[in-house]
Amino acid sequence: MGEELRLPIAADVDVVEARQQGRALAAVAGFSSGEQTVIAAAISEIARNILMYAKKGEIILSLVQNGDRQGVSVVAIDQGPGIPDIERAMQYGYSTSHGVGAGLPGAKRLMDEFEVDSVVGRGTTITMAKWRRAI
Amino acid sequence: MEVPILRQGQYLIASIQSALTDADLSHLREALIAQVGRSRCRGVIVDVTALDVMDSFAVRTLRDIAHMARLRGAETVIVGIQPDVAFAMVQLGLTLKGVATVLDLEEGLAFLDGRTKERVVESKPKRPSSRG
Image 1 (tube, rainbow over the protein chains, first blue to last red):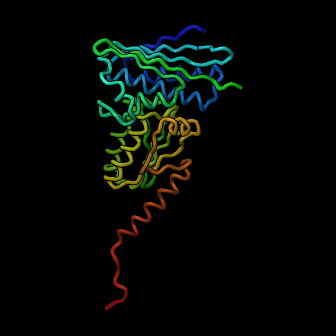
Image 2 (cartoon, chains in turn orange, purple; image 1 turned 45 degrees about the vertical axis):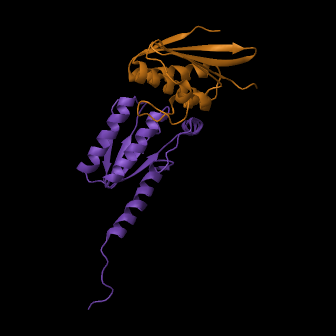
Image 3 (cartoon, rainbow over the protein chains, first blue to last red; image 1 turned 60 degrees about the vertical axis):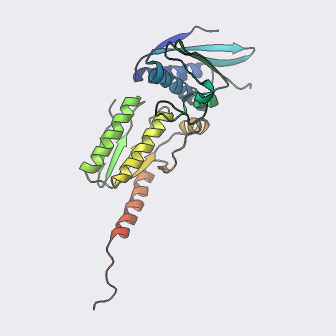
């Protein structure tokens, strides 16, 4: 386990910063440039979700290891309104904010692991990871 | 970061130079649509070669640009989607359905030349075939 990178998300420039840092970390972990873009896109979606629904929050990036497999972990935390209906929020094309509805389900498609933990009125934590394919 | 919009003949060319925030993308949309009217152009090229990621917001904004420009009488073509970006878009389930995309600027110009010629032919009043 390496050290973690904590990035505040409070404006749209932070979304760009978070996905660029995520891409850089994915490069360090040895992901191909295609996979780096995939990880950056997933971070972009969940970071934007923080802005849209909670106004501010945090993205924590870290390198993770599982046996001989290396990966990138992304945790998105906010103290926003929470997600009342996670099942619906995970449906592609469903949005409560006039968005595309690709945010959460899109990020889930892009990553290997994806978990949503949300309490209405308390906030949301999304934990996701992508693993390098074994060589 | 503001995206420079160049005019070349009947076309507008927006050449994205770096990663864009959501606000930058929205601003580009407004600026292009306003300029389509002001400059009476027939075509718009958006060069996304330098975009690091095309996520749902970027794709929706590009689609909006194309549809709004069409309503204002101009065709839009997106050029320069990088292989990695295309790979992530497909995995995200994002499409640019109904929006023309070609490989690069050169092909974009050729595409618009073809499209705008068609339009002019379509709208030309028919001449009587023989003088009477």
